[in-house]
Every structure is written in C-alpha cells, then in structure tokens.
Length: 111
Length: 115
Image (cartoon, rainbow over all chains, first blue to last red; front, side, top):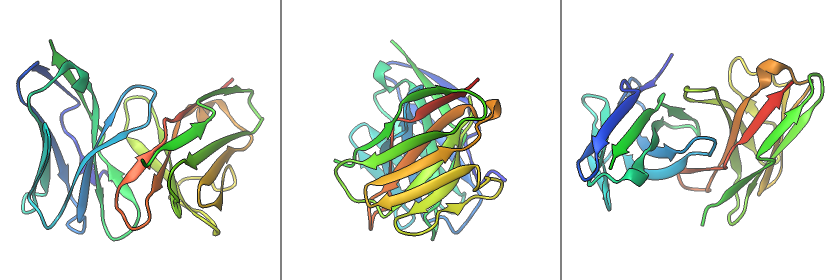
C-alpha cells in the first residue's frame, strides 16, 4: 500500500527554467513532509521540509508547497541547474518515527 | 553537521556467509537509526527501526532472524545479513534521526552483492 506517490517517474527541464516535482499522499495523519535528493549509489540527501501547519517553505532555489486539502505537495526548483539532475524522493511522516517514501522522480536538467 | 557514515560501501560475499554493515553518526548522537533497502528503480523500503539499548522494530515481511540489528551505542548501529542469499543483493541505506527533530540524515549506502 503506497501511501506516498510520485506519479511522474521522470522529468526533463531546460537549464534556467522551473522544475516542478509533485507528490501525493493518502494518509491525513501525516504532519511532516520532506524532500530528498539522491544520486546513484549514494544515500539520499535532505533538501527541504515542511510542517503541516505551513503551506509553503522556501530555501534558496527550492520551495515546497503543501496543499493539505488535496493531500498534495510539490517541490519547485528555480532556476534549474544541471547539477540538480538527480532522483528526488518525497517522504511523509506522522506521529511515529517512520518515514514513508515515494517512488522517486528522476530529474534531468538539460544545459 | 549531521553526517552519517556507512561501512563498507561495497561488499561481495558468498552465498551462506554473513555480512555486517556499520552505520555511524559522526557528529551527533542518534537514539534512533533506521535501515532501508532499495531495489533498482524503486523506493526506499524501511526494514527496521533501531533504538539504542533496546530491540529493533522490524517492518512486516522483514525476517528479524536474517537481518540482525544491534544499536549498541548512541552513534553506532549494525545490520548483519545472516546466511546471505543472492536475493539479498541490494543497496542498504541507514539513516539517523537527530533527537527532537524530524529530519533523518542518511548514510551513503552499502552495495551488497551475494554470489
């Protein structure tokens, strides 16, 4: 039962443009959401997070938006850079320690 | 800050042998560590939650007798794959949670190949 879903397995964007990665979840008890970036054969790197009490969190080029009513979050990267090319995972957490990860979206930024 | 290391980064073992993977939090104490497994082109699958000084909590479908987890100190957790089989070949990743924070910080992963 996939509680966190990333329906786009891949995304290609021109350098300088905006990248939008989407994530949907089913469990209304989730109250904390994170985005991780992962390169092949490496562990995920924490990117940005958002609490359910907010609807937006911004850190430099990265902004995460949360729409609780739609159970949807998105990561915006602007401007996109070739070094942003990686797999991006969203994750959600509730009352316990457990994180539920999406299946990832592979982002390719074309120079 | 919040650096997590894993050792080894890559290991090949023969079927039937055991392999131990270490996960260390280098600059913080972690009362809770997590072990994940990632199959090619798939998401991270949580295997177990490791709490310092107590038994690990395994996710449904994960054999606790096969994947032995020990969290002996606030900076070290180990995963031992016992009697390894080729189907255990995978990428194993640990993470550590800073006490009081939600974020988990991940190690670089260990590629296990069982021949």
